Length: 330
View 1 (cartoon, one colour):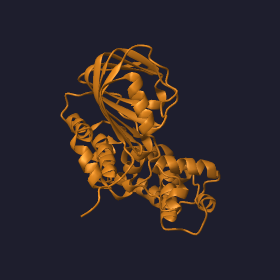
View 2 (cartoon, rainbow, N blue to C red; view 1 turned 135 degrees about the vertical axis):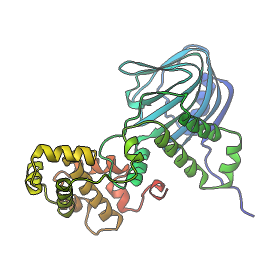
View 3 (cartoon, rainbow, N blue to C red; view 1 turned 180 degrees about the vertical axis):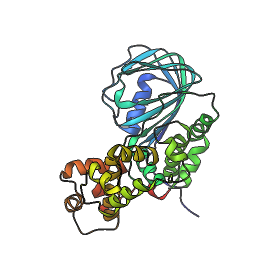
View 4 (spheres, rainbow, N blue to C red; view 1 turned 90 degrees about the vertical axis):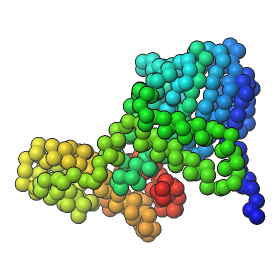
């Protein structure tokens, strides 16, 4: 007989707790993530469930009382809101309003304040950008050199969004506690389900690439340039030189990369060099991070580490140390 799994709680439940009491409970379980938020100054009660685990939070909440909260600088997370009642207004450069049938994807770092009105209720989740980057890199088999951007407002009448809502409902349901206490793997599995559900259902800048069954058949001049880049990742050859090697004009080569590879020549070169660096670190190369960066033509090691972190959601040292995310094994 196996003993129940013991871990720090990561889910809190509220039956219309006052705002102050809910905030106190939140801080005890998750730490002072939002300790510096100004008080609302008006009576508020909160009912529902909130959970947070390793870069993902999920919630099914409803509020009594209207209030506005000024938001300080927050982590690089993306918040997805599926409103079930009332309204939630994120004040960015312009107001972004979520109401029933209008879902929101909001970059937390751009939020100035949040307003809750009309008895707002929601199913929602927030996911650290790095988790999306890691998963996309695995699914597409290449580094992610451009930040993922999600459609900021969506029509929730589309059936695809019901899948996200159903997973959030499962994550905040009473049955989850039993599952979490019976398996050490369940929290990670839940994290994976939430990330995949959003990538599959919510439109974003990589949606087309994920739907594409395989690489398009590129014309000969594009293939020649790709082959040269892959065979000489350490060479900082210019786009003009690549065009000459491919026997076409610069414009023709640039257009070919955009049409058939979905990226620019320079971005593709960086993808290849980062991929070679990743493989070197993954295989336990004896060379240091600095040596690998310089061997692949990155003269600024700090900038190389920045590119690598953005592309894989992990630092070069993390990969060297074998700390690849569980997402690499999904």
